[in-house]
Length: 107
Length: 113
Image 1 (cartoon, helix red, strand yellow):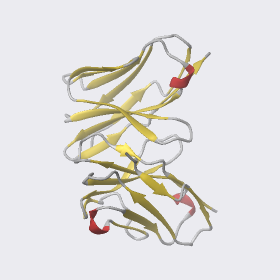
Image 2: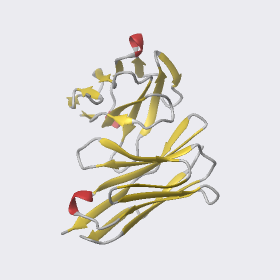
Image 3: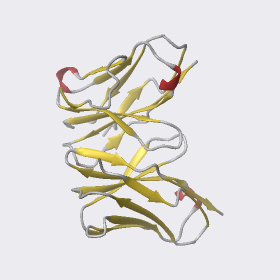
């Protein structure tokens, strides 16, 4: 079983701040997914990556395969970024989900 | 294009009653997942289908839970009888193939009284 751990569990930031959420996993994987879940809302896939870095708007995801670590960065954070961010590892036909990082961005 | 559709969105039942959830995945998606999500936790896989075949149901409590995906399209997840600990959000997701980007439905919030 792949243990997926996220940090921090909770994060409060001022609007405009640069935010980093970390994810580490215990065994080799084929891909790492970053998901976003708004309160009372469904889950949206943000990124799927297996190496390097991906960027979409103000969101950047990176992965270091050797260190078994991925980060999600949000530049110029905005209150609408407030949500739970979940990382999920995929390998051996199995998905393993972290417990999520709850982000609150204050105006 | 329509996303993953789930119904009902909310369900409140008394313990020992049966309940069923329905999911319509995105057209063309071969893989369908049912997850359970408890408050403050990440999703927990219950069952994964490749077309109409259940290829991973190791986490499905088979004494009370059952699922089907007839014709490899829509899927139904059933609990009978429901217990208090089954209160959670039940999420359906689909993807073209396993490991690809998953698209999630809005979920069904189940409350067992």
